[in-house]
Image (cartoon, rainbow, N blue to C red):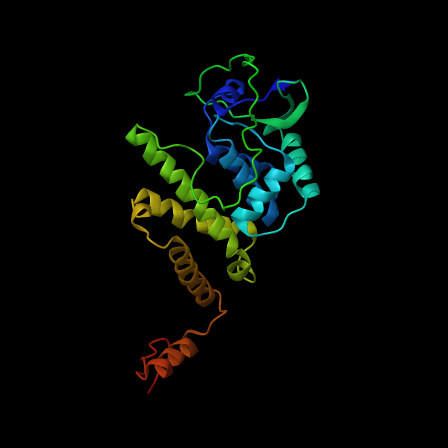
Length: 261
């Protein structure tokens, strides 16, 4: 049984340098997540940031945080099953925890991170001093609007953190519009490939930091991509579409797709 503590104490149980994106991708690769599970995955990825892949939380507290953040209802049984699923996928371990009085407290979750060349060798667990403090066991009254990390002094690390937050927020919005744009066009894998491509391009071209309204940016991009797809695969008749634009604007548009005398 592990000892619960502050983030700096919980970080002693860390399995290495924690990367939220890597954790999210690994979960997606190993399981076809529902919309609810996808949102829970993003919440878990944020909770694990502060202590390098380690966090402690009670199930009922997780429910409150989830409902505040996503404005959706979720049951305790769904949360229990989800954490059980993550453990079966071997992306995290669930560890019983104790307080100073040796009574059981909220579980401690440790992300099982993939080793990379940059990661140091895994260190054995080090038992922290038993000054109990449950990291996330205080119910939140406001939605999470900021990352759980404090600002970093190193500028390059700050930029990397900002990019990760941008990706997380982008994916939340992309999943929000999944039903609206994917039905009748793409399956889930195709939809994610298309959306990840334009998000990655925004990052590579340094446009991401200039986007003021991320929701509107993603929605407008999906509208354009969907429209091009509909024309390409015959879901929209180009001639009729041009006629509609002409009627709407009062300025008829020459339809070069039709041969006219």
